[in-house]
Length: 227
Length: 164
Image (cartoon, rainbow over all chains, first blue to last red; front, side):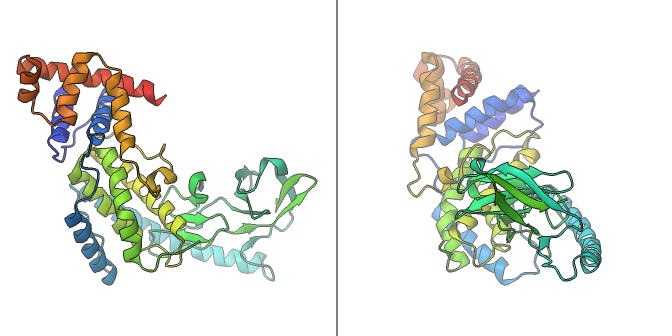
């Protein structure tokens, strides 16, 4: 009976205990969210971290950073279940990445000899309009999809530049994180800057930067060189 | 943009905000502490040393969003709260306003009938037990439980209206 489980969850919140997991239904979500809002909105409530916690976590992080081979500790009750999943996924990712690197190398040496390997250089390409200049103001970012190529074009300090919108790890479509002006990979929490440089990743081997795409601005249109 | 001198600076500068935003989303200290630890354990090692403050915060924010989503998947199988509607600015504002959650709470409570508001105030804000709340309202403990349950469901409707 979920009504009882819901009430127990709320009582745990009210007592500052760690609530126990249960299989919630859609009807539980709104009351739970409100219970959390009300609890977090308690005047002078417990929304600042305990000093002991902050110090203990810093020591734990220092130990982990000094000792790389150890897998990250996960103390959360729900963390144990996830670890198995994460390890499995990481093994698959590592195996696929090794295969991916080989294929990529072969393609690059055949097709792009003499070119900047970091810039997309199709054998028979052309300039394709992706957005009107006026729709890409300073600081703006737009996604584009040309069928064969997807990417993001941005105007930074007046200059337009485009990068591939596909993660260099396993090919997932990147998502624009507009507030941070970064590109997030939904598959492995990898983050790229708008110039294609890797910002952060959680993979055993850092993925390469995003290929750049030649970009120009002509007659009020932003164009990229693509097929 | 400025970069952090060392990982300890990254940690010290951001742990408070990450904890606060996660606490606001899970409503209890044990889980908020675990999730905060999870964010930093996952995020610190892969961070590029030269990353700017803005990049570091964007990454921590993304990590927190992922960790929170995983938490709800494992805890209830449904996402009760997310960081999708929060902006990095609101999380890392240099003068974090503790009144934001309080203002939201007040708005919800103000829209409720008196007895609903009273039971929720007593239990959620004043941390009374059911028994204490019942005594304060002059009703039986059983009635207080039922009243609280109904009040919370009504408050949830109000919150959804407020959010729209």
